[in-house]
Image (cartoon, rainbow, N blue to C red; front, side, top):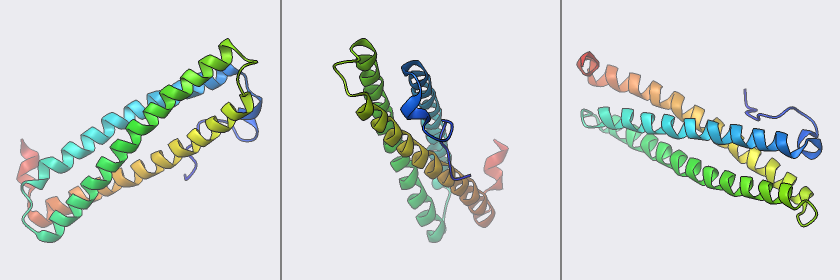
Length: 149
């Protein structure tokens, strides 16, 4: 469960062709755009119940988790920028293969994949925390009536 990489094991990145790396990178971009929307939803979910909370311990927990979600959103935007730059590097390599360092690009690709994998792991952990905390807040604050809307 801890490995969120999209590529096969082994030396795939070092030996695959540029088109396959392009498809893989576009897949990352698509995933990150989904996570960006998911994070917006999670943040709105926390905001929706935040105003009804009266217990200090619940306020602190929601506030801390909200900061984590905002941090994930910033990381997501940073990764999307890196992917855009990475796709530009890939286009340059495909256009002028002898002017660019393919090994350096492939190393960059692996590093980007590691960052994305860590990001996904963190988002999934925070998503689980949001739903657990939301359930706890609804129970402890007796906010069930808010779900009736």
